[in-house]
Length: 194
Ligand SMILES: [Zn+2]
Picture 1 (tube, rainbow, N blue to C red):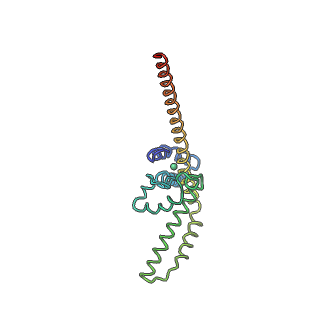
Picture 2: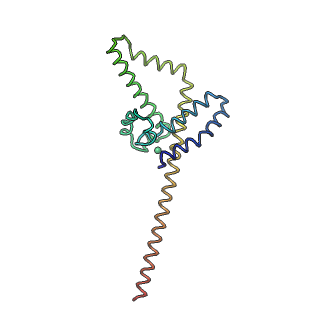
């Protein structure tokens, strides 16, 4: 598994290519900025490694504890955190649930203190409606950026793990060869003494 720093480097190195390709095909600065920022966010803070005590997890600072249930729910490198599409969708759902819970608790406390007649169900419904009607296109673009960040992470996980496995196997084979040569030479030495 690559270290967090390696993942960061891959995210930064691939960013100019992503920006160039997005701008070339879309000719839209706003869309390019949205894709680039969501890709960066996904690579640095919202990636699949939120399922362990990773650099991505630590970057959430004092609110990183909100990812603890996620870590307990999903095993490291499982389909639910490192799976294509499913990983990003589950993280988005998880984050949305946490934010909604925080908002509900906040509204309930405010209602208790100031006795305001405010329906939180209606507020959430209005927010969802506003996002779905006005910002649906932007949400899709952000979703694509987040998923691209996750894909870059998953691919680098696979490539670097394969290289490491191959290196370990070669090292083991060379060690075994050396040991068998040593055994042969020592047995040859013993037979000469006889
Ligand atoms: Zn990973």
